[in-house]
Amino acid sequence: MKMKKLGILLSVMFFAVATMAQGYEIGDKVKDFHLKNVDGSHVSMADFPDANGFIIIFSCNHCPYVVAYEDRMIEIHNEFAPHGFPVIAINPNDTIAEPRDSFTNMKVRAKEKGFPFPYVIDADQSVYPKFGATRTPHIFLLKRDGADLRVAYIGAIDDNFRDASAVEERFLANAIHAVQRGETPEPAVTRAIGCTIKTRN
Amino acid sequence: MRNMRVFLSLLIVLFISHTLVASKSDHLTVFNFEEFEHWLYKETDSIYVINFWATWCAPCVKEIPDFEKLYEKYKTDKVKVLFVSLDFPAHIENRVIPFIKRMNMQAQVILLDDPRSNRWIPKVSDEWTGAIPATLVYTRDFRQFYEREFKFDELEEIIIPLLK
Image 1 (cartoon, rainbow over the protein chains, first blue to last red):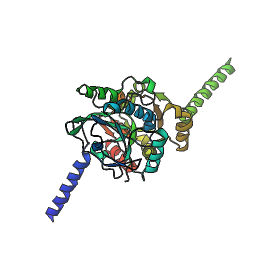
Image 2 (image 1 turned 135 degrees about the vertical axis):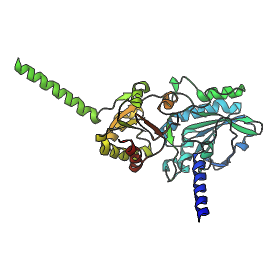
Image 3 (image 1 turned 180 degrees about the horizontal axis):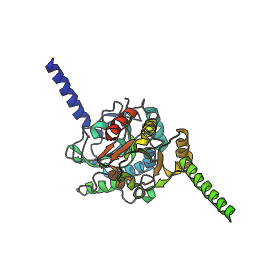
Image 4 (image 1 turned 30 degrees about the vertical axis):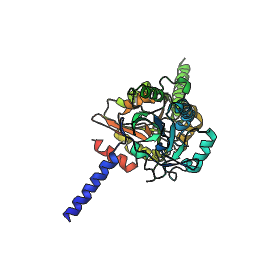
């Protein structure tokens, strides 16, 4: 009986520690994913053997901060995909908790905006916790390190969500340039207001 | 002369009461972070509950009645509830003010308009990744930041030990 209690206590403690895990940090090795894209195919990072890295953007349909950045997401893909850094946008939201982020609506939004990059769904919500994504938009720049992909930058696209013309620092573009030069991005982590990732309670 | 003085005083009273009434819900004060920052460091015995929200944020909207309830129950106990809207300034007239009226929000509401959030988020809390809802609770010897949703009971659990 006592052992059983201890067992329960230990598993509760383990669970508490596991849920406290914050996800990838700068320099961490990233695990690949296999997620359904709006075109019906499945996308993995392994599908891009020539990529020098990836711009993983946790995104969605409904969040005003995402909407404010959609055009810049397209621009950054068009600017950096030819240099081996394509965008992959991942919708991490539970589509019952937030019906506006349903797969059907993702297809509609991708078509409306003409996304030149994959827009995939983290349908079982298993990918975003590994990254430690907490909001949309939330960006993770990955760089190739031999056979591995490692986190090089985490945060925002730039320093002004509201007005692209008033941007003073292009955090993400600067980080990619640093990676291309073999340097460590500075800052390597930035913060921005965003929408929480929606889960079913 | 005397009549004139009475008339003037009356005018002043009318003016003040009008401003007070108007400021309640027809008007929303907009601050940049520099102007807002002092709210984070009040040197008083009051307990400050500062909630960051937006009308477009569903979980924020859901918890507003719980914060309002906290305000109503503890306002005489020096609990100050401040709602900091992160809505876009372009939506003040057509979304935020109508929302405040519809929800009959009684605690103070201000709007923080500062797009360079990478600069000011860490100044609110080093723990804040930027997702909302987010809430800061502090008093003279207590300071805690929460990037999560709250229910009334959970808020009360934090506040009660701070009421001395």
